Length: 450
Ligand code: GLU
Image (cartoon, rainbow, N blue to C red; front, side, top):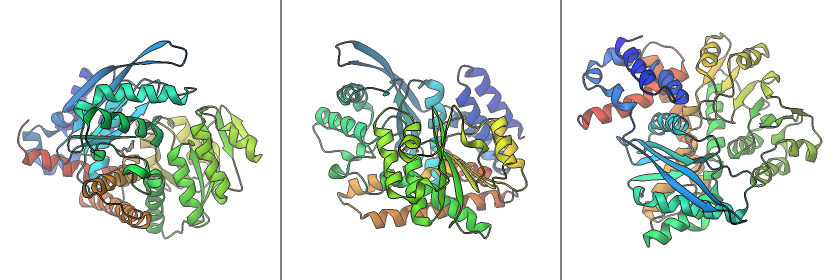
């Protein structure tokens, strides 16, 4: 590995010992960049790497709210404005019990390169709170969101930083967050948030965009191998908004999603979740119930449920981990390989440990695609939502979907070309890191030292 890269990784490890997820993503991204750094000594001279691993700004804030029984709760809110070289900071908010600086920073770091890959002018950011929405009432969620936004609103804006949803934050939460922003600002600045409802500036196709984008990405990869998506079986982990989008597009494309998973276990639907609109729609119901259980699907549709297990041992053509970070470690990766999976398409942010990812990439008969490229359609359509808000226009669902489709084709092509350019062959993982990095690095370089 390039000596400068090794020294930056060592710096990050020494400085951020309590941030394992952040160290993991820094190692993953930077270890792809050796040929780029060798070819661009000016980036080392400007110390681009030590600069890019340090957020431009990151802050915490107190979020206090009262539950339905009158008890007062205090949570920590976060926003990490990681890199604004190519556009306003852009990235979701995650409300989950385990949210901490390491998780916010790993997500923010991934977001920089993902957003660059979309080809649209958006910088990288991320935020959230250690608030657990499980079992909370509608009124409690609204009060939490209002309190969260009261603390955050001064530091964001349509040209400054544009948050959106992530785990625990869907269109309902975005609605409450936007309501509070508007109330405090006294101005119609709906480009400050994306993933909004359709009555006040949300983009059609945004709810489906991450899952649709992942399926368009998969289609391109299959095309490269001379295969058709029709009739392919797909094992999916997770059962949230992204899994829903995957199932909805799979239904249109004639592909079969056969598993879903939750914290309680996984379900196996040999007939295909993506073969009936009723089944696909039920995913939304399960999510909005706040029960966080996938067994409900098995009970409703009479399919097998495997308690406490993950779907890594299931036979399918494609594996799409779409749940959360570090779901697939080395042992799970070995099971996936043993089952003859040919396409390992990451969808959730960093679902694979670095060790497992290395192992999967080494398999001769396997194609591995990285989440920061595969799931970029979500934030890509968020950027289209921002564009519509600036123009005070609404584009049709077909228009947005067509742009998303082109965007994903572009991402696959750009990633493949970037890897090819540096002699790495058809390496979609390294190619995504290189293509995303080069755009941001060049922008930082041209803007001077700071
Ligand atoms: N949270 C999503 C992501 O991981 C979406 C971010 C956005 O739309 O700003 O990319």
